Image 1 (cartoon, rainbow, N blue to C red):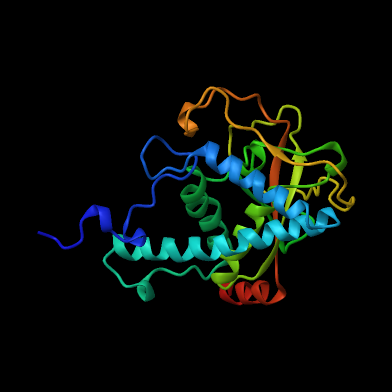
Image 2 (cartoon, rainbow, N blue to C red):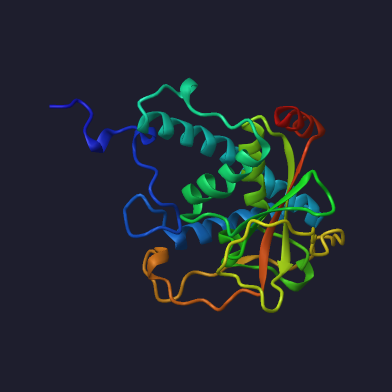
Amino acid sequence: MSRHNSAHTHILDRPLGRGVRGGTDQSTVSLSAFALLYSELVQYHQSRVASISELERRLESAGYGVGLRVLELLAFRSSGNNNRSVDQCKREIRLMSILQFVSSTVWKSLFGKAADSLERSIDHSDEYMIVDYEPLTSTFVSVPSDLGQLSVDAYISGIISGVLEASGFPARVTAHSVRVEEGENVNQSSSHGGSRNDGGKNDRNSVGGGSMHGGMLAGTSGGMLGNIPSLPQRKDKAVFLVKFSREVLARDAQLER
């Protein structure tokens, strides 16, 4: 009989599960619990800052540590599935490869689906955009009108930054809320180049008296995503703008030769 039964298996030895957007398996996180905890996190930091930009930096900082650990966990899982040591795991060395890893593998491990698109800015060669039409962190958080420029998806941009930094691709990652254009197919992913749209993020307002609140899921008990009712289509999407450092761009240019 094995000394290590399932009840005492180390967390790194367990399957990753399907993320907070997954099915009904026990390793899936309760969406109601996540929505409540995240709204509390936003409110906690909101009461301790004087500007929207500072609040977003705090959310990014909270997500950064998650990104470091997600990459480590994926490396452990990859080595276990292929009977290799962590040192023997594949390491991405090209810029586009690491972006595809983030927008697919990392996204699926966290949210149960890949990002909707990965695009390159037409105006700036060092900028890329990861697009998600249904970002989990802003789906159940209501932003008051006096904080209209706030992007609570900054937490996810911090996760992206942590994964990239730990992978050797330092970059500045920012979250932007962009209006979905009329006729835009939100159900069809694309990988073509796109122009930058900062969604008016240059206009920063000070944090006022409005407060955040997260909505618990109506008609659910425990809030697994598979049980939630249909939600109205969002009018905006999250665009995570990734701006790589000069060193990363120079290294990638040399590898391309």
